[in-house]
Length: 221
Picture (spheres, helix red, strand yellow):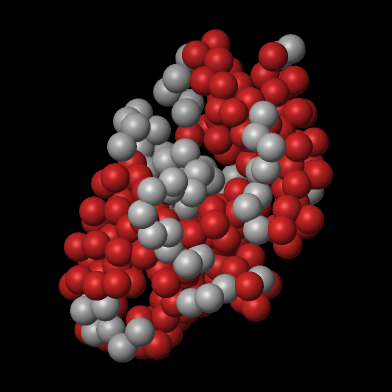
C-alpha cells in the first residue's frame, strides 16, 4: 500500500521542523507535536491516509507554490487535515480541526493562521468551498491538492482504490460498494472537480476517467 521508508520519514520530520521555525513557533513543542503527528498517521488501519499521503500533498504543493498566497498556512492544513481518521465514524474532520487548533496553540502559532487551517480541514468533509463568510485564501487550492490522487496515472489510482478498500476492510463488500459508488458519483457528477484552473487543466480529464473506471468496477464486480 502507500508507505514511506524511514529515511523519508526523517526528511518529513525536518520539513515539519523547518515549517514551525518559519512560523516562529516553539521549537521545543515542535518535537512534541511531531511525535503526536507521527503516532496518528502511523495507525495500523491507515493504508492511504498516512504519512505517505502528507508527503504526496506537500510535494504537490511545492510544484504549484507560485499559485499559493500563503504557503505556511497551506502546509499546516496539509499536515493536520487527516490527523483523526476513523472509517467507522463520520466526524473525523471536526475532530481533526479541534485537535489541530489545540496543537497549534501549543506551538504558539498566530490565531488567524489557526482559523485558516481549521476552515481548510472542515471543508474536506464534502470537498466544497464554504458559501458563507470569508473563505481562507488557499482553501480552493488545498482542496484541489487533496483531490489530486483522482487525477493520478491509472496504476497509481488503482493502488489508491485498493488502499481505500483496505481502510474499510471491516465493512462487508456489498455495503462498501454501495457507499463508495455514492461518493464517487457525487464527484463525477460535478461540473468542476477542481477549483483552480491550473489544477483542472492538469488533472480533470484523467480524474474523470479514473472515477468512471472505479464506478464501473464496483458496479460490475
